[in-house]
Image: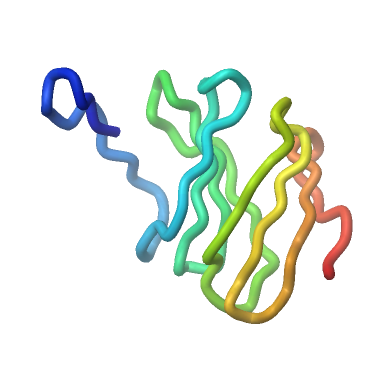
Length: 97
């Protein structure tokens, strides 16, 4: 994470095995979602910088994601051509398109 006002790195998030392709803030900026080339979606705690969980289910790199404002539903898209809808509350896949 980078502080633009101070022009310096605040935290380096470690947890994905490959490139992060997209990030998305949820829960009033308390959580961060990450879409990665390692085929997973990560959920991070912004304050501590720790990876809380990863969703696994794509067969190729995850290239896009979004979430409902409350962060309970996460949607990810992958180069495998599949869109997955996740329940971030109980960490399960709801369905795939």
